[in-house]
Image 1 (cartoon, rainbow, N blue to C red):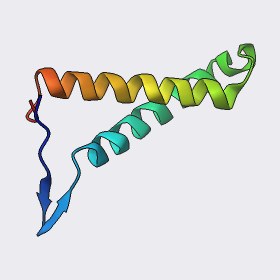
Image 2: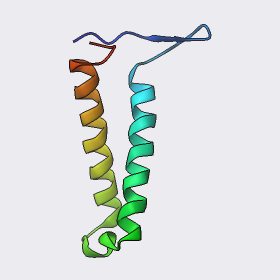
Image 3: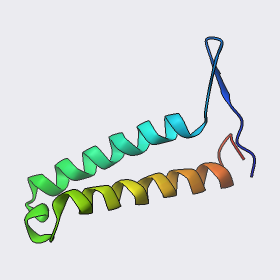
Image 4: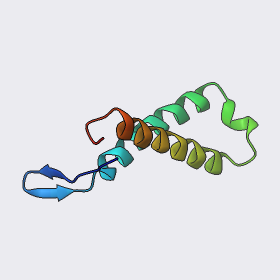
Length: 72
């Protein structure tokens, strides 16, 4: 597994930065879907649940990109 910096207009960006942003957008969408259907009312701590979903999504993105993505 090899992660290299991304050259963005002469600025080197860590490869985790875009992954963090994509995971945040996916988790935000999942949170909105869960709120729309009332699923967040059934969890003990909604903020902790949202953070856990974010971490799961981020972990999945990192694992997929390490295995099959351009960073591998």
